[in-house]
View (cartoon, helix red, strand yellow):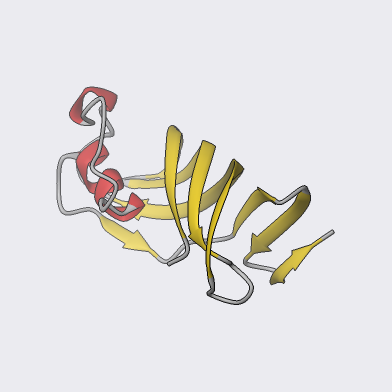
Length: 120
């Protein structure tokens, strides 16, 4: 871990059949870094972060946005948010693609399911 994120999430849910859904979670916000992403050395960094992740979900309960609290603790994983959204022990298949972009000391850095972490 090299930073704390302060993110806003949006959930886009598409029914793909009986009790099955594709959920895209988009995130946008900022991070406060306390270690170098590259070396692990202590450092103070701040920047923006934006991205998305796709999940396949199976649930007998339909999603209900009112099940989500207005704010989550920083330790709550996105899969837990999905379970809250469906208000049940939803079956969540591993993510089907993701991509996050960070601005780190003026560089645009990308991490994704299709390639290594890289900056330009």
